[in-house]
Image (cartoon, rainbow, N blue to C red; front, side, top):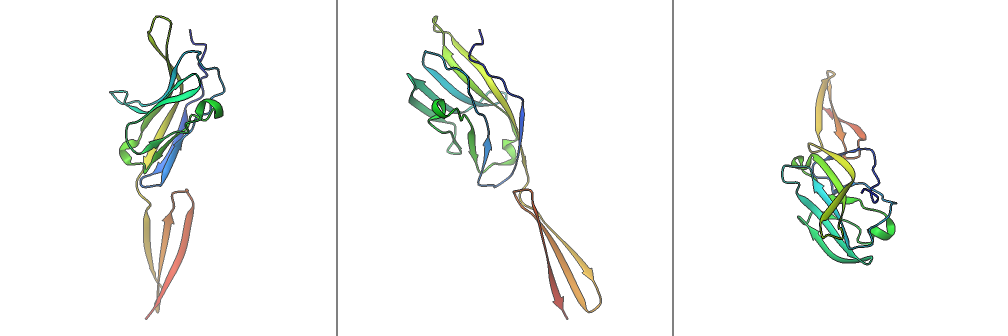
Length: 162
């Protein structure tokens, strides 16, 4: 019985190593079980590591678990529908698939879990600086291109006279 599930298309999120944080987005507008339930973000590694867990009973937050100090979620997720996970200071090793799941126990005390969404996180290397020099005789122009974490390119020139 998958009456609680609300499947979304796979999402790809790109980030740069060392950014302040990256958001793994998911917004839920489905029903919740009448019984206590948990919102669980997992890494799709071999161990299916739980990164963040919020446990609710009668609509109230009862327990919160974070694998590291690098993850956070809004605690009012059932009211707001915002199940997004914030990952602080992304690292290259964070590149992986992540799933947001709704977990509960049925009347026979069996743990049930529905995958709500999957997010692929692609973390790229740190901000790069690429210098190039052009000799124009009396002046040397150095052109730097800085690639920012917001995917914009900022260019400027430095002119040395000798």
